Length: 179
Image (cartoon, rainbow, N blue to C red; front, side, top):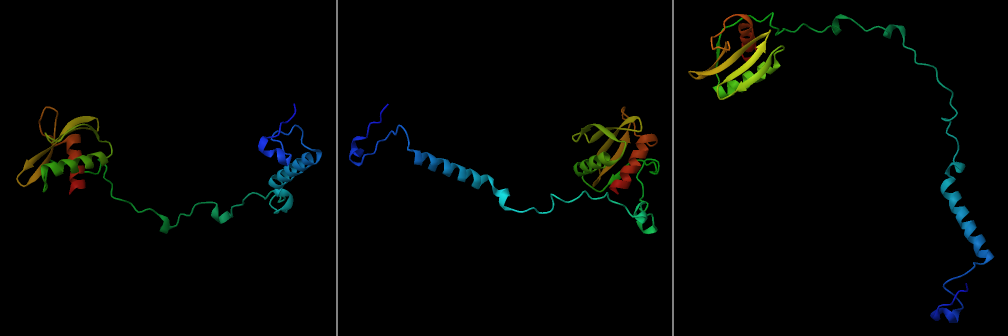
């Protein structure tokens, strides 16, 4: 196939489709391609070794004998904190908070969630009642208006007020937490 020169370039002797590039042009293209390849991949040829590659393996870490065991001096002892467990809480009867019933309901709910061993199964702010399970007993914690405050009491599921057992222990814990 012979290249046909473009009509506008006929005077200059240049054709758009060159059928075979000259031998010098091939060598020039080959030289440019190899120079570009060397320039982009030959970075490691020009930099020296940092010494990190040749470093020997270091020996394992040795712990000094006096740091082998934890220190147990008097300054590192954790002070005893007053426990709020059910065993130390004195059983209590119903008590009154100087707060609105709505606000007392929220405070009692937070306190119940933070007491270990208490699980709240139902809550009704409209009735002012939490149904809780504590020490394998299920009972109600009722919040009702009384004068300018709110009365907190424990009641059995049939409505009788509790003044002993797990209900009284839980009331004692609530009284400690709510003040």
